[in-house]
Image (tube, rainbow, N blue to C red; front, side, top):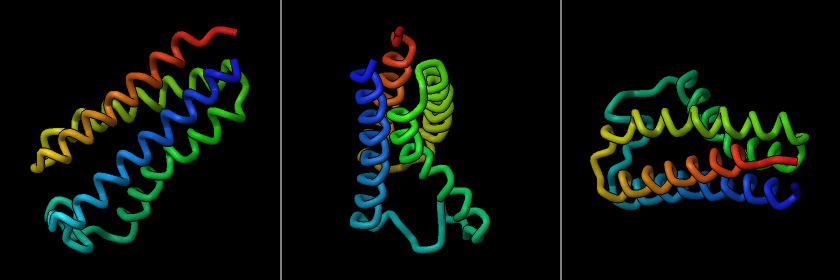
Amino acid sequence: MEDVKIILSASWVALMLTYLLGDVLRIYSGDFKAGEIGGMKISQDQWLGVAVLMVIPVVMSFLSLTLNYPVSRWANLIVALVFFGFNLIGLPGYPSAYDKFLIIVGLGFNVLTVWYAWQWTV
């Protein structure tokens, strides 16, 4: 049981680092314009929404280690599936090859999270 908790937590950390790598590459490549996403000016409320969305893998990393079996299993399944769908829908919107590659890597981490959570039995 503890091994699955560690694997699930690590998959959320890997997903978060993949997202962070994409953000860093976007800045260094010049694909980033301060205060905008996709060429649109973003409000403080929208930035708060982005912050909430991006902290979810951090929270899931912690919860994967601390929640009990049935709750952790279902939380991992549901949240990973939501992130998979969100990123799959957004994939065509990324113009750069590195962005598409990193989103696909992130989708892979979501699939692994779902698979480990689904296979998890006590």
